[in-house]
Image 1 (cartoon, rainbow, N blue to C red):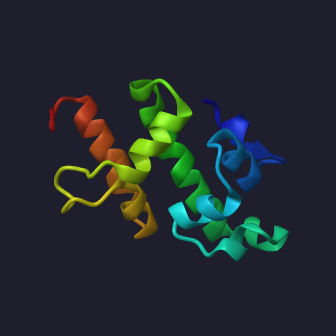
Image 2 (image 1 turned 90 degrees about the vertical axis):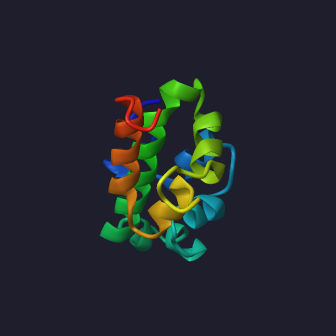
Length: 116
């Protein structure tokens, strides 16, 4: 999975992300904690907040994709697997709360054997 796979014109493109993950732009918006209209208007897609949330999603998926072997499996993990030490919250829930950096640090810790 490459970042360019999700981008167009130097920005993360919700339709490309949705296509790779075989879902809708509305679901992508929901999984990153944005309203569905945030990914429908060009001005909203280009906003710093929207681009930051899309980048965080892509960063998390890129980090775990090698472990699961596919984009779809990484996305399923992101949406449904409770993370140890986060009161049963998933990566998706943490990203929605603005805690993507904690998710990335958790993944690094697991890879280093801290939570193994």
